[in-house]
Amino acid sequence: MNAQVVENQQNLSWYFWPVLPLYPYGKRKTLCREIIKDTLWVFDQLQGILYTVVPIRMSIIKLQEGGLLVYAPVAPTPECIHIIQELVAKYGEVKYIILPTSSGLEHKIFIGPFAKQFPQALVYVAPRQWSFPFNLPLSWLGFPAKRTLFLSVNNQNNPFGDEFKYAVLDINLGQGSFQEVALLHKPSQTLFLTDTIVSINEQPPEILQIDPYPLLFHARENAQQKIIDSADNRLCGWQRIALFAIYFRPSAVKIADFGEMWKDAKKAPDRSSQAYFGFFPFQWDENWQDTFTVLSSNGRPFVAPILQVLILPQAPSKVIEWADKIATWDFKQIISCHFDAPIQTTPQQFRQAFSFLEKDPQMIDHQPLLKEDLRFIQELEANLLKLGIATPTREKV
Image (cartoon, rainbow, N blue to C red):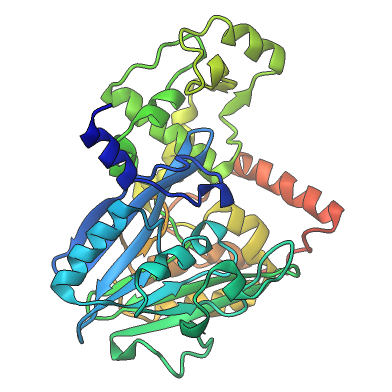
């Protein structure tokens, strides 16, 4: 490996990956995209398990008064910080860093290391932060004690001025809380969200195409097929990854038993550690793409099933009240922290995404998620209820 390659690899280094050991572990590529010229940028990285990898996203907004606001930081690798410093040199210092969730560990772990890179920035976090198994002070978790502040739920003292407004969704889950800070940047008519809304494009995200191995790994039909790079295989791999990431165990896939996996692994053309020693347990139905078509539905915004089944039904009235409030705001696009962005949408489409919480939902213009694909998460909910970990959901509004 030559010196240039070594230097490039060092620029991708994320040394705290053992805290949350997700792929791609200690080497994280950052892709920066300018969404609105001289105003708005998104920074995509990857995270996942067993090559089921999806984008995780940070947004940076240029403030009208000068300086930058950061929403949901990603891993502050040398490459990532270098790109931000280029923005700082042109538009001013990072003034605000926002952690828009209380439960999303995949977002929370980056705050301390990221804030350390910008010692002048104020860190605003969603209220009622918590940690497991022990509820530790934020300073013990790496948050800068003297400049970490809680966002007010009622938004009366907006620290970001007339340029922004925000609304906090707060759901008590017993052990902790689920929170989502929806932030509206009024000048660009952009709504920033963490997890509540996602959209899935049929084409693979650009960040996944830099190193397409996960796409090609999942494009195969069995362990004995070679990993071949092609546009069709990248497309197939992405759509299957999306189904895994959204449903955990989609109805269109069957998992082979260990004996069958072992037999196939011995015949695999690649039994390296990168290929998981030849093990490939996934057997897809012939019409599996129909399931993806319903999921993607031309990139419509929707609420991920894990939230639809396990989280948001814990407080349906509160969620609808929050969604109703946001639906009165003037925005034309959503930037979420995962999957596709920006999502070209309307406040009405945003509101419709939460109609699953209503007894008599508003008329929706897209097909709901397939019941058979939700079955695994519903079974998970039932098991958590039996163990006393989850609580029964409330009645719909």
